[in-house]
Every structure is written in structure tokens, then in C-alpha cells.
Length: 343
Image (cartoon, rainbow, N blue to C red; front, side, top):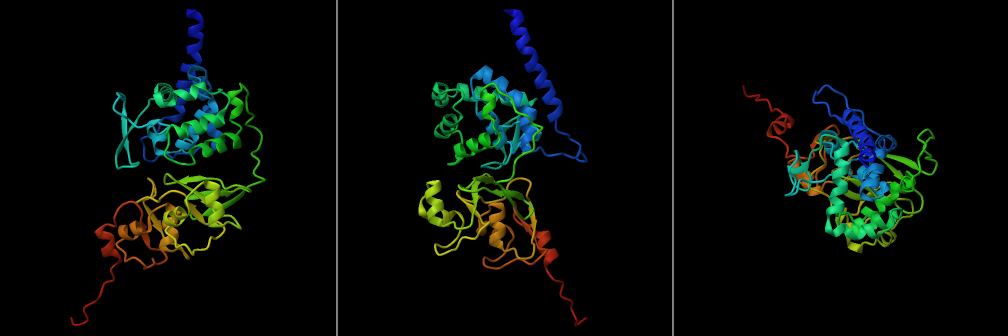
């Protein structure tokens, strides 16, 4: 019995140590961070999800999909600086290391881990020990759809499309094979024949998929991209929303027209941009409204932060503040100098 236990622990320690070396975040400001693609993340961390599936009975596909979504494929600030791949906050019972990060409120407390494996294990324990998640373990371990819907029902996330996003990630990347004890080949090229890439500004790359709308997340807000032939009615019916919500969340009138490629939020916009997007330089053709949509900021807050009168538009090349109120020094720099010709 002791020998079998020892053999089981060895691969866990080995994977944990390996991940720790890969994920250690440089403290040197001159170091260059190379972002992970989704496929790279799956290849690097699938073994952790499988280990946790065997230990906790949570489907590996669910764990991986949650990690990919919550950590932005391992590229989020929490993932890089705290090895926190699931965005788990401290809560009153957490006695381990902590890191403070702006989320729903400024400077919220999040758990910090020595290795990525610790994050995965703590995520499993968080679900296993949570009374509201107990019903999930009555489901089949290969029924990822019911698990995704169950997590949303139990209130794991506030997003009304959380389950559909997890299911989409699992199916797009065939993560369900891990639940069945299978493997994936990472040598085959990704098939993008059915997708069309649309680039909006310098913030994100978006994809439009045929048939139903794919739901994305920006600034922790769910949104879709308008497709040709879309109407407010067909979108509200597809997403199960109330008629007034799309107008209110996107700050538009009821007689507004939808434009192909337009960002359309299905949740309220926030008071500031997400961490890492402090400023925006205005490009030709951009308006205050288009910029507010690009970063998921309420239009009134964008005006407020830049000390601008509502209804006015910025000039090309103007620097807009996205997270804090414009500093007084910047106002002075933009104020024209009037020479005193009487001297």
C-alpha cells in the first residue's frame, strides 16, 4: 500500500515542480513576457487537470475550460504574478499568501500560490468542499455540459453565459477527450476554415462564427459581435434577454441600427477599463462612443475621466485616460500658450 501511494505522489510532485519553473514570474522589469496561445496552455497544463480529475472527480475538461477562461489562457495578471489561474479570492478562511488586484472593487484580495499545481488543487478543493456544488458530483464525470450548466446554476460566476462559454471552449478544443481517458495530438494545425478574423483597434482580435453568436469577454463583460442580418429581436431571443437590456447596456436609442462587426454588450459596461489599459491614443474615425465600446467603459465615465464636456469629440492623436481621472499636469500641457503682445 505504501509503495503504491509513493508511486502516485511522484508524478504529482514532478509536474508541480516543472510548472513552477515555467510559470515563475520575472521581477526584473526588463524581462519580456511571451504570451501563451490557447493550444500551448492546454498542452502545458492538461496533465494537472487530469491529475485533479482522478483525485477530485471533477471532469478535466471543466477544469481546463475554467482555467482557460478565468486566466485568459494563462496570460492574466493574477496567473502570471500569483499563479492564480481560477481567480479565487482570499475569503475569510484563507491563511496562505495573498496578492491585491483590482476586480469588482479596488485592491481586492486574491490567493497567491507557489506553483500552478497548487492553484489547480485549491480550485478542486474549493468546489469539493462547497455545499452548493455537492449536487454536481451526482452527474456523470463525462457529462461536461451538465457540469457547466450546474456551475452556472450554483452561482460560480455572475455571467449569464458562463455555461455556454465553458461548453464552447471544451468543444472547440476537444477537451472532452481527457474526461474519457483519451489524448490529443498537438501537431495537427488548427482548422480556422469556418472563422473570419475581425480586428478592432489594438485591444483584441475577435472572430465571427456562422449560425449562433459566440460570446466573448472584455473588461469582465460579456459581448457579441453583430453579424449581417442581425436584429435586436433575434439577438435578445437567442440570448434570452429582455428587449430593453441591449439598448441600456450599449447606451443606444431604441431606433438605433445594428452594423456588421459592431461590439454589442450583453451586460452593463464598467466605470473604467481593465487593468493594463490605462490610456488610448485617438485614431482617425474614432469617437468617444466607439472608444467606450472598445474598452467596455460607460460613456459618461470616459468623459468624466478626461475632463471633457459630454457631446464633444476628441482630436486625432489625443491621449485619453481609461482608468484614472486625467491629471492636472496633462491638462496644462494641452492648454495653448497665449502670448502677451502688450509687452
